[in-house]
Every structure is written in C-alpha cells, then in structure tokens.
Amino acid sequence: MQEDLREDAVVQYWLGKKEKLIEEIREHGRDVIVSTYLSTYLDHSHALTSLKDAYELEPAFPELTEEESSHILGLEPPLWTEWVPGKARMDFQTYPRLTAFAETMWSSKEGKNYDEFELRLKGFLQRLDVLGVAYAGAREVKPSFFARLFKMFTIAIPQTKTARRK
Image (cartoon, rainbow, N blue to C red):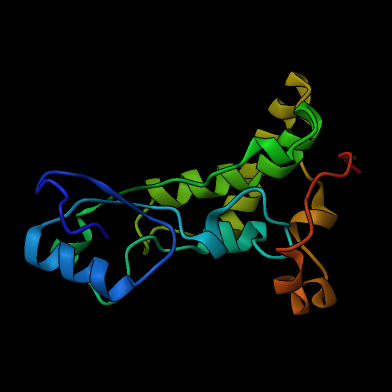
C-alpha cells in the first residue's frame, strides 16, 4: 500500500500483504474493496473459482472484529476482457458466478445457504435463457475432483475458448 495515500482514500485489495491492509483498517479506519486475485477473478477458470467457492467467499477477513469488518465496503469480481474473444465467452466466464458473488455481499455469513441458493439459481438461469446469456453450465460450475485438484495450473491457461453451454 502506498505510504502517501490520503486518509479518506478507499483501497482495493487484490494481492499483497494482508497484514498491512488489516493494520490500515485498524489504525486508520481505511475502507476497502476486496477483489482477491485467487478467489474473485472471473477470467480464471471455474476449476479455480467454482460456483460454490464464489458463494462461500467471505470478503471480511477472519482476523477482523465485527466493527473492523464494516470497513470492507464490497467485493469486486474483475473480468479482464482483453482476454475474452466475444460476448458468449464473457457470459460463460461471468454467469452464474457473478450471481453467487452478489448474494455473498447481500447476505450475512449466518444467513447464507448454498443449497437454497442453488434452488433459487434455477429461476435466475431461466431469465438468463430468455435474455440469450451464454452462461456456464453445470459441468463447468461444478468442476470434477480432478479439475479441482489441478486448479492452480489453470491460472496460466487463457480462458478464451468459445463458450458452449450444455
């Protein structure tokens, strides 16, 4: 984190020393937008960040008190579109994970239930069908054991192949 930031500057945490960020929150009341590189980037494969991972993400660090956690203003799941060849692939990388991230920010930790989310998601996916959104199918959003086992290796693979929903 830059040393010469204004006291009221909001920072984005995506990579770096979490301890320094926590110190800034505690000592200066620094507000933060979380977009952690290994857990929120939509241009990563679904093997790295599955639908369930997106839903179960807790943007507030466990080291923070409830009051300190109020400085986590939100979550940003980035998608670097220079790696995306078209709208179908953008849809595939984005949905339905963006829906899971949104509910993660709307819901308290105690109020979240992944099984209930999956039931509600069915209705939302029907809306996406009507709109022609080429979201990722069940095979992608629930990667196999082997895909999950080797998930870290997917970071170096551009997620640019043509999207196909099954």
